[in-house]
Length: 112
Image (cartoon, rainbow, N blue to C red; front, top):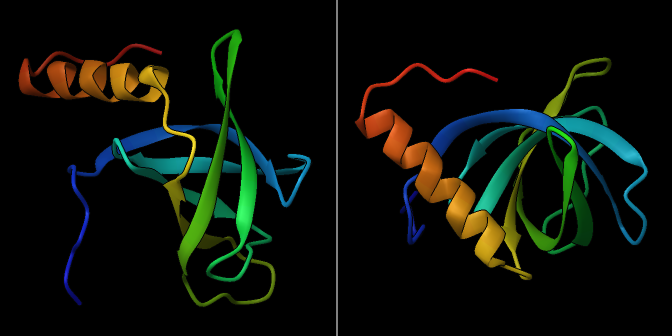
């Protein structure tokens, strides 16, 4: 499968809430790019679903919208993965991504 991302995915883990209109389902992010996010959760939406996302960053919450691009197969009682493309990209996401890239290239340990 061809990778059509415009920016590299980086490891990224933080709490997320998401839902079709109201973010009321919980999960966590496992990677991030300027254009999207990978989410692991017990409930995922089918591809092409529009979802609202709350990304928890310490005491801040980033509110985003995205479209589910892919979903991993699921086994009962285990978390599935879904890839979400941002449709409400913000400067905050771009800044967060650039900060993480800078830390990785500087080879500095990340302290949460």
